[in-house]
Length: 339
Image 1 (cartoon, helix red, strand yellow):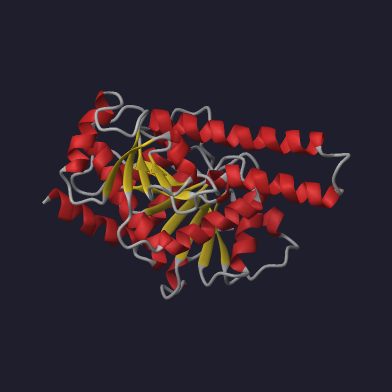
Image 2: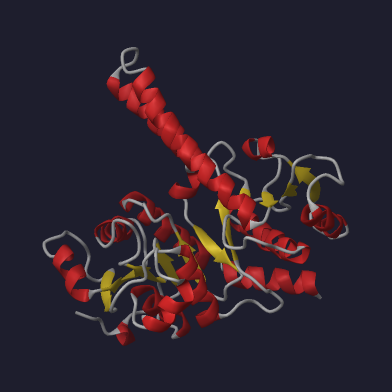
């Protein structure tokens, strides 16, 4: 069962959701869409196998005016090579969803599927802002420093100084729009706070940042990431992704450690609340999906293991990107710094 998009009003945000992306798709994706629709004035499109989606929706309590189905054939999996998958699966759910932006049928896309495939599809289909060589991913990192965004968290393994600079410019726009900070503090992640510390990339980027009009505070170290010392922290995706995965794993381990160690010393409900809080503080990236920065379209990606709560949160993030006009703001800011 597909849907006729021609009669959908453009007065509310239109968000296409990759219903087949993620470890628990389509169930968790559909549940997340239903959850989001209860508190969000938006038109949601579930993109994927219409038969499978319809079977899961059958009997569910949801507003059919808020949630529609857009048919797609196949999905892109974690083991698929991103570029090859897009060529061999032109009707896959993520491809159809992102094409909806290009065709002006959606204002944003949300996916819990493979980041590489989503980014490749978004970059090739929608293009990048003028002057950019690569997009990146990023956003809030740990709950202990909610006003700190890190870019890049894994999409660019090797970077050049001017690419880190572009990440910082886009991160500043994000910090203003999402954190409400007028003049975000910018730092480069390094092994020492002093100028001259770090590898060649960090040292060369330092000079570029120092001579710019950014509110550059210098290098920041790993321990500074928990203190909101900087609102925007930049690094290459190699470092960023290791940091991300380490923090997530630490949260998983601490959750089990606390449950085991305190099981005989605390009330069961209180212990569960404590362990869950610790997990959430160290898994902010799972709880708050982030957009692709640099792509000419609002594309929000989340963790592959996301449950319905995280899917709903990603949909709210996509809606927020539309509300604050994130794309035009980034475009204007890049024009200023590149002129």
